[in-house]
Amino acid sequence: MITLIIAIFVLGYACIAFEHKIKVDKAATSLAMFGLIWMVYSVFSGGAHVGEELMEHLGSTCETLVFLIGAMTVVEIIDTHGGFFIILKKITTRKKLKLLWLLAWIAFFMSAVLDNMTTTIVMVMVLRRMIERPKDRWIFAGIIIIAANAGGAWSPIGDVTTIMLWMRGNVTTVPLIVYLIVPCVVSLLVPLLFATMMVKKYKGEIFSQQELTYTLPEGVGRQFSRSVFCLGVLGLLMVPVIKATTGLPPYVGVMIVLGLLWIYTEIVYGQKRDIEESAKNRVSKVIEHIDMPTILFFLGILMSVAGLQSAGILGSVATFLDESVHEVFTIAGSIGVLSSIVDNVPLVAGCMGMYPIATPEAIALSADPAYLQAFTQDGLFWLLLTYCAGVGGSILIIGSAAGVIAMGLEKINFTWYLKTISLLALVGYLSGIAVIYLEHLIIGL
Image (tube, rainbow, N blue to C red; front, side):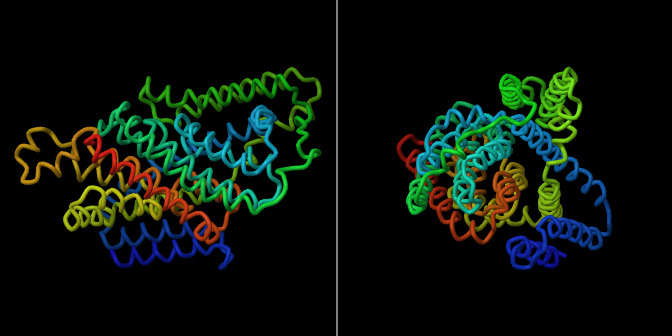
């Protein structure tokens, strides 16, 4: 069973990677892979409790998908109403090099507050308004992926895996920020320096004077556009606050934001006399623009990985690392690289289940107390795992939610990303680990 499931996953992964060669949409491949993995698992396990496991994983997966649909819709509403004109108006540079650095650091700090999915959606939407040629945008989008993942790793609400570790008490807010912000900055800075040399070969400015002129959509005034932008962005900023204060999952917060923004726009359009004009930008029309193939691709990928988890494959990998390697940097670093291939959520969840938070009593009784010390609250392993699981997903474009979103929105070729961005992301990833190692030696982390 294990061999067959791994074969299905590897074959499906290869088809996704070479989507443009075989001319089959990656969403179709991921859905077929999801179904086949669970079918094999059900047949060989006798079907016992498979339905319950499937529903459990589907529930957690749908939480992510509902959040994604809500966030994408809110961002699409803002864009449809010209809200990003506010950002565009502040970005006055006409040079691609300056724009690269500006968008990278905006994405880095934005993803520390918003999730990396929402950050990537917003930044790619802005990028589309600034650069016309799709191939030129790909380098920028690649750096935005790295920046969004790096920015989410040092903030307790910046990434799904960070939230998991933070909510379970493996890491706490102050040590997380203090110890990881510098490694995360380095993990972006190093690729950004290399990308700077790549962008220099493109001659000319971002856009002509005519392209710089931005007009609001028909029937949308400047004040209305500004109010939609402010309500949408402030609403997204409130999503982690709602989660922290109520304990509700993030998708509830984003649905509240979407509902309130929908009500507001309906009230405004209801006051307009021109019914045909007001119908153009209503939310009921905006929803039609949501990229459903990307949503279905995300469903297939997450449920395929869930199948690997239920079959015990991910647990076996984690156990092998613990028993054969027995070295904190190697284990966490390997998990980070592995998270660029499979989803980092089950990997981190597996680590949390396999390695409980070490107590002083357990350390005193351990045959290797120095090793076990790394697994205490805010210990070296948990902080390193937080960094690796968040930043390592940038190595491959399908290794993170940010990468999947950018791939869907910009139709980025998997092979192009592998040849152009992956090495930059890997060098930045290893550079950040080196900084954590220095912190370990100097500060005694």
